[in-house]
Amino acid sequence: MPLKNIKNKINSKKLSRPFGIIKKINSTNLIATGLNPSIGDIVKICSNEKEMPGMVTSLDENSFIVTPFSFLEGFKIGDKIYIDENGMNIPVGEGLLGRVVDPFMNPIDSKGPITFEKKYPIMKKPISPLKRGVINEVFSTGIKAIDGLLTCGKGQKLGIFAGSGVGKSTLMSMIVKGSSAEIKVIALIGERGREIPEFIEHNLKGDLANTVIIAATSDDSALMRKYGAFSAMAVAEYFKDKGKDVLFLMDSITRFAMAQREIGLAQGEPPTSKGYPPSSIILLPQLMERAGKEKGKGSITAFFTVLVEGDDTSADPIADQARSILDGHIILNRELTDRGMYPPIDILSSASRVMNNVVNKEHLTLVQKFKYLYSLLKENEVLIRIGAYQKGVDRDLDEAIEKKEAMENFLKQNPDELYKYEEILNLLKEII
Image (cartoon, rainbow, N blue to C red; front, side, top):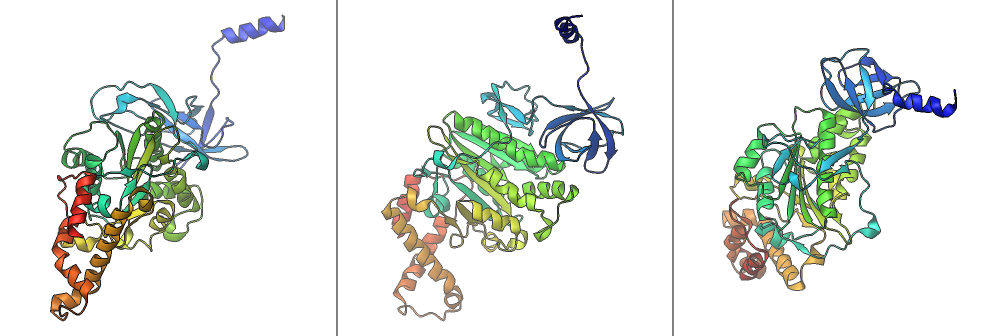
């Protein structure tokens, strides 16, 4: 029989897809043989009763390890594994606006199916350094302490560092409501399930206009939590590539790093500081550097919350590494929370590294004077409280005491109050 006829005969047959066979299962992953996959390939784990996605995370000469996106209950030795032809791509489109989805863009808000336009890769190289636009425009958040004293720029990456229960979620909601961004992408990674509806209803008042929420809660698998963050960034990149200015908010980087810690330790990586394997530290810039401003396109201005253990930013390896990658840090102080000052931003410990490039000299002078007077109050707080300081000894301190109430009122803000950038600048001028 001619070779051409043989080929046509084979093509007309419905041949079985290549598959692998599960040889071993443990609590977090499984070992299989029979395929020749690459690291990072997405696979489907199939049994008679269920089907679940997973990822190839380790290779051996004769076998490979798959980490599932869910839990392994119900699977057994001999079940099949198929390569997913879609790979690490997610569907995206304008239909995501106003919706709450999981990392695979499946709706979880009971509002029906979503119409998508194209597929975008979850994993992608950050913007090339020479294609990055210069950050020279103010990004307004509507918060006096941030816009006035820690001014952000379009395309900047900032961290919100705080211990548990200090007020991160409230500050995030204020940024979302007061932001000047056209599109808002919120990634809720590794948080408690009850916090998702609470954040939407209490913090955002149910208003999801021009907003996408990607949620991977603490009960999801480590792989789902890890790639939930990358999926959310891919959604933000889709809108950025359309020329939009995007606000990206992620809560929290610490849970994201913890997810990678689970994966890394299960694969035999050595634990380092606080039990984090090297891959947890390496992963942070891969995510954070994808935010920014790109020439000829839009921008992604990113706020990443970092949960600080014991309120000490220097003792936490994730917080320390995040500060070195980000373009600024906003420190929330528990003492200010205890005193009833909201948002509890410690302006003397916080900094915006691009502020000098986005504000004029007059604004910069006002900020320097405000911080100087406020620091004098903090240094002499005990003397002032016990009445040991006599007026007239230090002229600058006298001025600081005179303006103490006005400065503290400037730092306070009700969650429902939002200000325009020009209004904040005028308030700062009145004080100084």
